Length: 64
Image 1 (cartoon, helix red, strand yellow):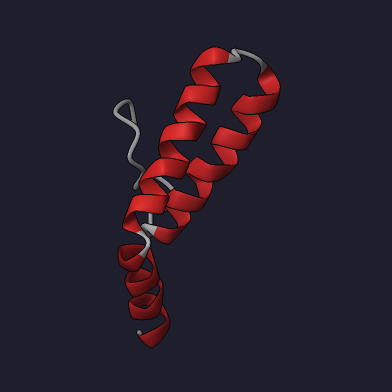
Image 2 (tube, one colour):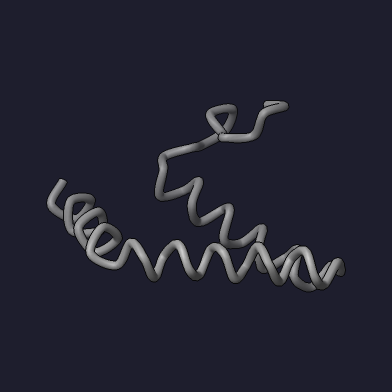
């Protein structure tokens, strides 16, 4: 539980930076529609799903 609280504290302390990184990744994905950046964005989405506890059928995809 301490590990989760530590991760949440780090994210909240760096909230602006986290949002900037997500925004830059979104802008890159829009400007460069190719498979290379799709892999990077998918890895980030997988990491977010993992940290959010979204496993199996419990995902944040609207069609799931």
